[in-house]
Image (cartoon, rainbow, N blue to C red; front, side, top):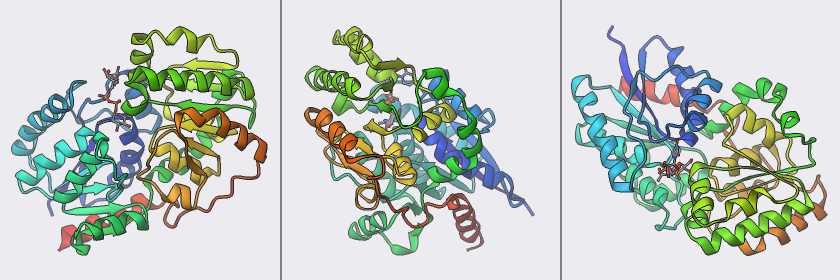
Length: 368
Ligand code: UD1
């Protein structure tokens, strides 16, 4: 019997931890061949190939080499590069993950060529349409054929939007699969020692959202709040390329790197970063995935945003939303509450088995 070809689309750093468990689970199956397609949205070694290596992903079968650009340029670039591949050898299914520009671009290509598309991490909504990711989520979920959700709130969002329930399957949170797959290496990794920090006696910072880093006023407030917070608790700030560019453009970079108590580093590979996260007293971030990882690990997470598409991390987990101006005050409150205060419950299906459920789901759909 001819094997079904599945295209797995990987584009930007937060995608790789979602693609890896599914790649490993699918390659263990005899009924399919997996074609790993990297759109090239992220291309620096520390944003891409280092993380691929950490997660045991091979070189992609196809690299579309799209690179950076405006939203239209990037989205159109991915579509223009991916369409010929689908025309010359159409996959049986396309699997897209997360909410980046490449996610919506490949979904549009599939939908127009009548190739079914599965969206992993479907149904999340921040309610804030100024976020580019929210537009990507809305469009992707409106036209994809199979929607794999991580949590009941995502199911409810899709129901509210009138999505046919037959398209929706809750498979859980695949980021947790990546963590569980790599747990031993994460625990044995030496990044904490290399950074000169002791378990539970430091915090980790990541910030990259346009709303936080693209305006000088907001970024300056954040730099000041992070500087002050570092006087309470040593902080390690892994600076995203977008943030580094903006800090330099606004003349804030030197002020940040000279802060006592603060270590500034370039983006870390997955294992190194998770070694830092697992030992941290608290995390300051505007990332999506880190809100989930900290809930799973029971580590306080201060999310510098006014909305989240992951409300379950607040309701059941360790996450709280913080305004830039209130960061120091919130750090103080977390430290004063003591290290046992971050009570959290692991949401259902955040169990390291999401990839297996996705594979079963695809198999079922192919039989239909
Ligand atoms: C993208 C995603 C965002 C995700 C984030 C994780 C969209 C709309 N945004 O945002 O959802 O949370 O990735 O990192 O898809 N750059 C480099 N090297 C790289 C990649 C980017 O230097 O490997 C630079 C670019 O030149 C650009 C900036 O970083 O100046 C932003 O990159 P881009 O991919 O456009 O968006 P992100 O902010 O990374």
